[in-house]
Length: 154
Image 1 (spheres, rainbow, N blue to C red):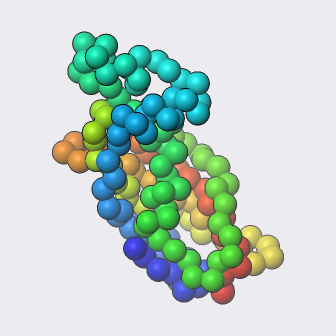
Image 2 (cartoon, helix red, strand yellow; image 1 turned 45 degrees about the vertical axis):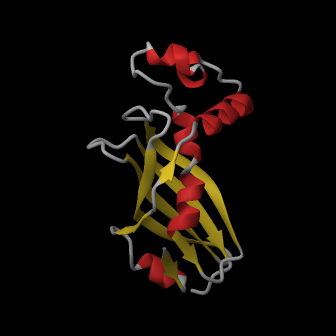
């Protein structure tokens, strides 16, 4: 976990990989709950028996489930002391570059691309989030994520 004590410490890390998170395991239960929440019940995700005969030989996580893990990766990867609030400001670019079979372990590499002040007491950060699957040479998701934090010391 990378701990920043001020926004100036954050700014000093532009262009650097700031954190690599621990691995998390993707379960069929998570996939099923995500399907319920989003209405995406495609068999490749929720029907393990049918998915065994599909193109990946097993059920796979939704791409948007993988993307929705980004806040978790930030939570376990870094903190800005004194910030009273952090918000997801959006995404500039997202690619799902490889499937995530159920049972896979994922982690994220968080690289700070930009950091700019936001009035009155905040900072907008642009992060390159590269989600890796254990045992794979290819990332499963690459996203440019925008986050805003407010209230930390300069």
